Length: 186
Image (cartoon, rainbow, N blue to C red):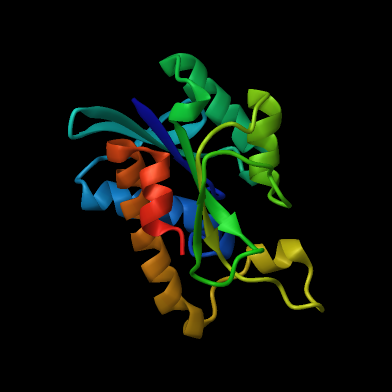
C-alpha cells in the first residue's frame, strides 16, 4: 500500500497558485486512473483505489500548508503505513519551473509543509516528488511568490510537470523509488 499526499492550500483562492502543484498532481493522477478523491477524512480530501495489485490512498491535506503534517500523521497512523510507503508531492522554489526531482528521503529545505510533515512524523525517510516553480524575484517575498499564480509563459511547462509527476507516482507504486529516479530524474 502507498499513501500519496499532494501538498497545497484548501479553497478556491489558492487553487491555481504555485504552492498548490502538489494538489494539481494528485488531481491529475486521480483523473488519469479514474480514482475518486472526494471524501473528507483525516483532515484531508482523500480517496482510495488500486494500481495493479497495489492499494493506493490519495490525499490533499486541508490543514493549510504549514500544518500538513497533522493530516499526514493521521493517515499514516490509520493505515499503519511505513514512511517508505508515503509519497509526498510538492512545489520547490529551488528547482527551475517545470523541473521534477525525485528523492527517497531528505530535508525539508525551505518548504513549511515538508517541515511540518518531517517534524510530526519524526523522520525524513520517505519518498518525495518535488516540482520546480522557480525562484522568486529578489524584490518579492517568498510567501507572496508561492501564493501567486503562474505566469502565462510558465503554464505549459507546469502542465508537463504535473503529468510527469503523475507518471512518477505510478512508477514508484509499480516499480519502486529507484526505478522512478532512474526514469524521471533529469
